[in-house]
Length: 189
Image 1 (cartoon, helix red, strand yellow):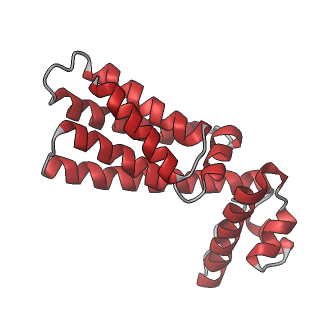
Image 2 (spheres, rainbow, N blue to C red):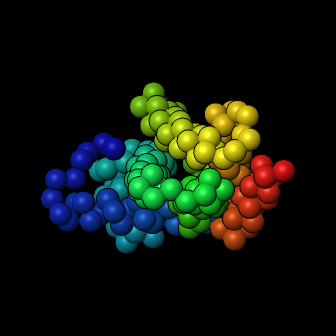
């Protein structure tokens, strides 16, 4: 961002801009323009430029926000699963369902994130940290399952497969949940 909003009104403007950007990017993809985003937010394009130099900066801020939400969602479900662990299959499906839910609102927008977001060192590290924590949690639950030979390798495969579905094969949440269930059936075999 060019400028950090200090006052409540400025913070509200940034929120309007980010909400509008998410809507316009989800509808138009990279064809979105700052003019259409500002119009959707109900602000002058000059107000947009006070905070964001271009549409790429808006997209990058949306990605950063998504990663923070993913971290919070994963942390919450992992804490719950560790406090009272269900059977391993149920635990893994709960983690996957959490990931699907985090991506359910705008699948096309999440595909855009994966394809066109700027890869800054901090941003890449944040995404990798969420992914690695997810792998560790899935591996923990798989290791509780009798007969699982390589829980770490299987967990990495599952997490990367779900990540690929969510970011590179956008679909409605119901379709994504069906795909995740099919992955679970494959693991069970």
